[in-house]
Image 1: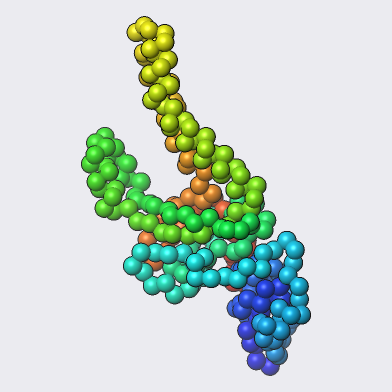
Image 2 (image 1 turned 30 degrees about the horizontal axis):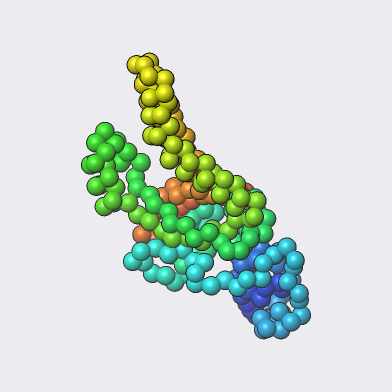
Length: 238
């Protein structure tokens, strides 16, 4: 018998014949040895109620990775070790990237930027670094799924980082003026630097995943939990 397409029994997403997990809702696909018929998606939706823990939200173009000036045709996202590689038009499984649980809607709209790490050597001249970085930095837009808990954690880190950056100048200045001696100026300067670095650290930690490399045809990310990486691998039978 001819093997036809496979449809997810939960959300009716059409999948490769070797799929083990649905790339849209994360449901496990139970495959028989031979598939002689493939029900229409509409029939599957009527025959199966969506699982309460999985969002039945359909996959749309807005959830696919967008690369500037690149072919938007959908391709497969791949897991390689502790990283995953997403091409133009690729997307993530319907799972929180930090814990693997069902995400809350809406997904996060994030823009990731990357340049070669060697470029940081130009920080000895910040103006030169900013000019060169603006020219060579690559970017990709990606919707990232997070559960309600990790969205709350991200929000706290964003607020903490923003407050530390806002306070890194006025607070040390006020402290130095209040104490009013030379030693206080030195302490206040180091205090301001610590606030600045702490603010940057919290803002960086608020990113659920990090871009390890961005090229014209793919982007590599780290920071996803093992369950999400396994779902990416098993969805395509790799």
